Image (cartoon, rainbow, N blue to C red; front, side, top):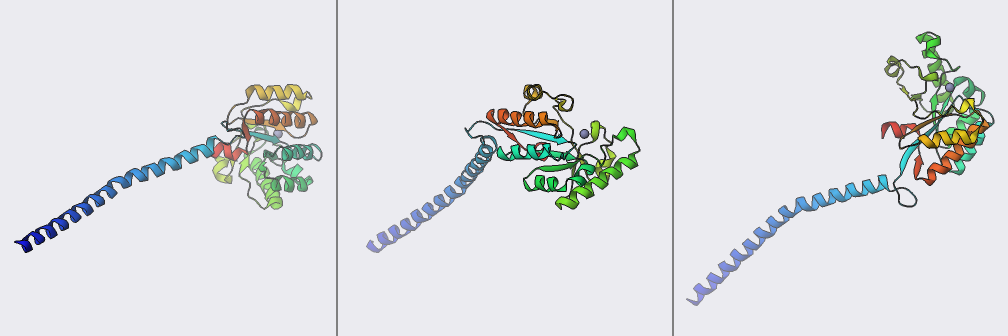
Length: 244
Ligand code: ZN
């Protein structure tokens, strides 16, 4: 009888231990998806935080892009690059092949300082004014000049006057970049007026068109940077606006 009692308790303990392991095992598999979900949502939160809260004061950062056409100019482009460097800002320069050939050291500087360099044809050719073949030749020649200096492939093109032919995108593996804000800086020497025009239209993902061949543009562009940085904007190269 005593032996029987011991045996009974022995089996009872085995049954209890088995039940314990069974429930522990079940609990683990039940809990796992919850932990996994929590981990995913924490990851999403941190990505979101990284994406949104990058302003110095923790406010939301909005991206915006400055683009400069027709350069490089031997004096004003350098002046602009100095100002952008001081402000830790990257821009996009759509240069002509003609000017890039004349001032390769400025192209090298742009590349070294993190700016994006795009193609603006060799001689500032408007597609409508000549054959498609001649236009294509200008783009190919300019790509060769720029990549001969930087060692980088040129992927972006700003067609002069905005006239473009879609079939060239696949043919040349190039992407056209137009603009959303045009302050007509080339026909005014009033830096205040140019600044006001840009600021009144600036919003998230704007692409601002300017020309780095004028002192008033340099002044206006740097004022625009100062003001929009205060408002929490982050200046990026156009690829970050078009593909992010
Ligand atoms: Zn132009």
